[in-house]
Length: 417
Length: 152
Image (cartoon, rainbow over all chains, first blue to last red; front, side):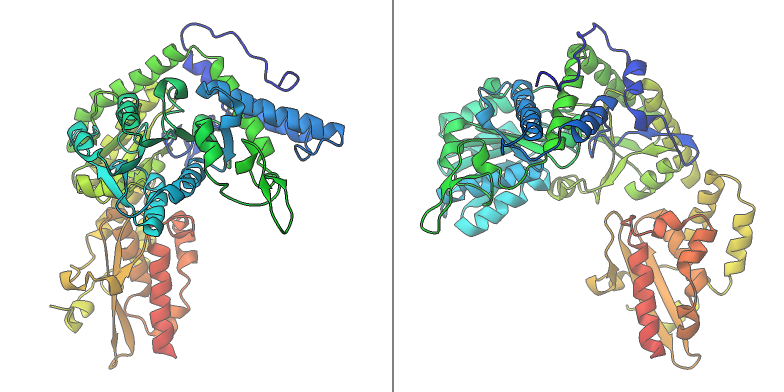
């Protein structure tokens, strides 16, 4: 996307959080009379100026429908759109752009795969998920199971919030057809060891699907190294716009599975006798796509490329470490999810306080967190809680903000004392 | 045991604690900490909610917190009495404010009380706005439906 891409700056070593924050206009505002402390990044991340500019410029200078080819604007839009696909291919290290399918988000991507695999499933087959899945990686499989007679089987989680590997080993069996697992838990922050699980599953001919929604904001997945058949993520969690997401798939499987939706773009030829499908990736992209959003997502990925990623990850880890160290300053506070490998996500409870009370009173102090079941009710049941409070950090959060969270929690606790 | 008539009549919210008490108290509260400390205090005035009334029929669906609501219409006085509970303290306190405004009123009077306006006045509107999934808005709707049926 030569004439469209945001100028890439060479990665600088180290990570300057103050400079990074200046790239996010929304962060410099007051909420309830206090400076905004945005710790709900797991729900949706904020957008850098580069993304806003790329989308604005797209609409001002090059918008038209894509793949129609009759005029100059159409060419510009198509070049930007397909350039964005190439950027995503690079981000995931996929072999080819034919494997990069635009979807509305992770949820639609998983629904596409589940529906595509349905014809292969029959009564008695098992779809292995885990107890820490987001509903988006449970319900589509349940719907397909209902249609086909297959069964959705959950791999257990340990009290620490690790995937229980004994449970995995005992459940991965002759009946397993699909392994659908999250790369990173949205509630616990656990980074699952997906590569060896995929390897074990592949050895048995099991199709593997990875929900990458919570992974991509924190590290870059390499789909070839992972070896998964499918990988899904959402743009809005990786600092891009809402309304678009990505499904990566192994080319042979994408060729084999049927289209998800019918309409324009996804066809090669339509007649009332016989309609044939377009080639990959267009076979799965019925209707006019989210063009500006694709351009915005590519700008977000380019923006992230400008950073020294290891330094950025180290800064994120420092946020989590500081938070962990401060837990003992709030009596009755305990962390849910203490896995060895975590992204900076802190789910917690405080004895005697309802998560909704915590969320309401932090909001009064300008601090945004998420409270509730996090679309992971089976996991809430496992921990025996109605919900948790969750602070989820991004690279633009500061150590001072972590301190403010805990000062806020201490104040809340005094109110209830 | 299910709630007795006496349990409804013993609810201090709307009788011993009046709407004027709450409005006066709010006048004196300076910052969010004082305001919410007062809301938490109010939550403690909610009478115990009978355990066997915590059933689906009395459940008001909210996204984050649970709310239960039962009512008793006193034929003699023509007044409608309410009991409310929630698992979240702030929601309980806000429910208490709703009760001082609505509890023990004749259905027709209840229906002319504008809860939205009251919450605007107290700068608490965001808690019952449609964007908050805490069940309070649904609860006010349910109370008004009950009153409308009695008033019909």
